[in-house]
Image (cartoon, rainbow, N blue to C red):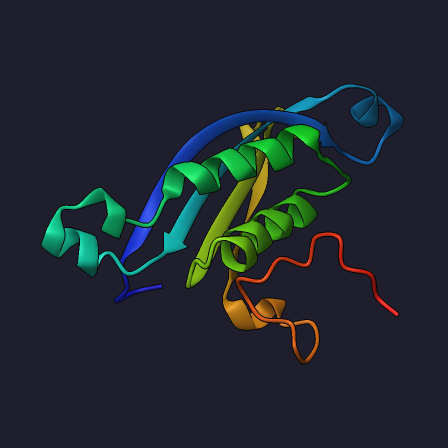
Length: 140
């Protein structure tokens, strides 16, 4: 998304259960994750004070924990879950999340997907605000 500051996190090498076949689901597989996170960096750029910075370390830890504990059939679903974490839980203004599965296709280094999401993509119902986690919420 042009015209806005963003933080880049490249090459997270993680492991999770991902795939559709019994063989793929038996053991954890390697995945690589790249994130582009839309944030306003003007305050920290002007002040050079860490307290004015968006905490990408905390987001990265949350992403790593989620991936390492996850079980998905598709890289698309995993990428969408990571985008939700970045936007809903940590307030990114937008995110591009790429998830690749090395060795998934013969003759290719990897196969993957890159998705783009904004806060409006995660407004499920009236009263659900972005930045307000839905973890543990019970639906009627």
